Image (cartoon, rainbow, N blue to C red; front, side, top):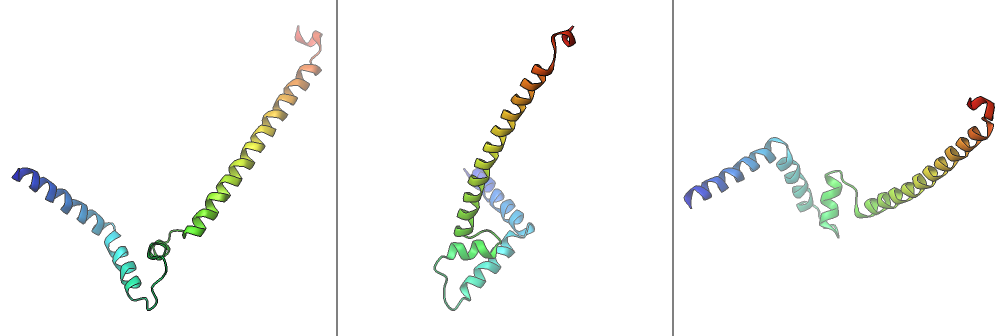
Length: 103
């Protein structure tokens, strides 16, 4: 049982060191201090943190999701048109190949 606790503590410590060495702890601390120092607290603490860390706000995220959906639709339409034109080209090639050319 004691060995399990030691392993668990070692994992926690290794993870803490990883967060510290990668700058995560500093970044989170700075953001949380900035939030604490706000005279008027934002309506969404989560959006505040996301924005300070460089991520999109909820509305920006929704806009990006919508843009992705629109672009996927356009891509599918263009791909379909491309396949259609490729098929037409193949048909034209076959029509233009005379029987004597095939021998």
